[in-house]
Every structure is written in structure tokens, then in C-alpha cells.
Image 1 (tube, rainbow, N blue to C red):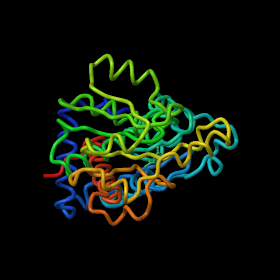
Image 2 (image 1 turned 135 degrees about the vertical axis):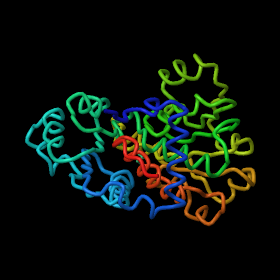
Image 3 (image 1 turned 120 degrees about the horizontal axis):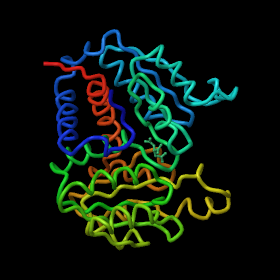
Image 4 (image 1 turned 120 degrees about the vertical axis):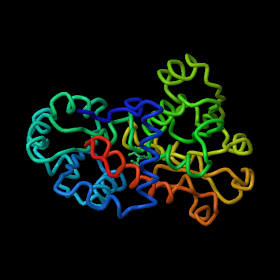
Length: 306
Ligand code: NCD
């Protein structure tokens, strides 16, 4: 049985196959409409979510399956003190596959050790968010036609942003990837990723504070929200929250074929006036998130459609 804890759980070849499947699903949705008839997905969300929970649910519904779950710790027995391992033993009796989001790093990993159904990590604290990474890879591949030879700008909260952490891990496996890390000093990428992943594998990158300094050289700009819920005090958050605001004027500095991505939710970091720019790709990214999660559910359940 397979789980998805990190994007590295799939080899590059397996990822290619998964992204091809997602693309086939996009082209021929009818072919897959009953692939999961009779199967159930449980979504166990101990932290707020809109896209990740609902896109897993939409994915299972599109495949003909059904869904169940809870969307906050308060509405589950976690509020009574139940452990993640007891909860997953229980859910294993009800569902065929589950997606779990938890504020504690490693909680989905604990779950998969006690589970008899595949567990998908739907975000664990500031650690990883592998299904967002699958979404991001599919989006980049569709927009740019490739996953190699790209300069990717990662902007915003690189310290706490789990989507950025997962995306870096996944992208360094392709050739010719270069990063521009755009963040305030206090929200720099943690050492355990900068040194242990980028430096160790000799991945070229530079760190800048000003977004304007990076824009002209980028193929992709990946914006992120300052992760309010991971700050220890409100004051620091307030000081940081509007550090970057991408607007029309800044977009003039970017190449014609540079796309803007964002895992969403956005707060102020992308002005709504950018939405009408053809390079704004964040809502297309949301749509790709459904196809890729359909492909993921089929893969983890080992269901093949001819
Ligand atoms: C992200 C997350 O939860 O990490 N959202 C998402 O799943 N698309 C990004 C964020 O919350 O800023």
C-alpha cells in the first residue's frame, strides 16, 4: 500500500506518469467518471482549508466515488483528546483512502503508520504540502511545456511556507533549475533546505529582498502569503504582511512569458488588478489541482482505466 507524505515519494518517472494521467483526465473526463464507483474518500482536516479539502472531494466525486470527513479539529473527537493514531484506525474501517491536514509536522506520517488505507498528506504544519506540489508541477508543465531549464522566483514567506518547501524538493530533481529566493531577511528559506538541499546538490540560486530586482529574469513567479498562523506574535506578522504587493506596475518589469502562480489563499500580496493579466495563472492552477488529485487517487488505489 502506498501513501503520499512528500513529493519525493514518487520518482521523477512516476511523477511523469501521474502528470500524464492528469492531462488525460483533463482531456477525457467522461472516461474516468465511474473509475471510483463504490469507493470512499475521507478528508480529515485539523486546520482550515478551502481548496485542498474541496479539491480532494471534487476529485473523488468526479471519479464516481463518495466523500466523508471533518473540516476542523473542533468537530472531531480530537476535541475530546483522541490521538491521530486512534482516529486513523477508526477511519480505516469506514473509507478506502484519506487526506489529512494537521498543524503538527509529521502528524500524517504517524497516521500512515497506523493506517490500513492510503493516507495523503494534505499539509502538515510548516513542513510539506505534496499535493500542492503535484498541482504546481502540472501547472508549470502545462504553462511552459517543460519542467527543466527554468528560473523560478519564490516570493514571500519562505520560512513557514510549506508549499515552497515541497516545491523546492520536487524541482531540484529536474535539470537546469535555478531559483531566485525573494523574501525579507526574517522570512528567509530555512537552513535545512538552503544548505541540505540547494547547497548540497549545487542548485544555483540567489537571494534578494526586492521583488523588482528579480522580476526581469524569471520564467515563473511563485507568490506566497505570509503564514499568519505560524507567527509567535501578532506584531511581527503585522510588520511583515504587506512586505510584497505585486501590482500592474511591477508586472511591467516581468517578461511577456513569465507566469504568476500562487497556491492561494491570497491576502494582499497580489493586487486584484493583476488578475486580468494573461500571465496570472493562479486560478488555472486551482483547476489543475482537481485533475492531479484525481490522478493521485487512482494511482494510490491502483485503479487503471483503459
Ligand atoms: C496553502 C497551504 O495551506 O499551505 N494553501 C493551499 O493549500 N493551497 C498556502 C497557504 O495557506 O498560504
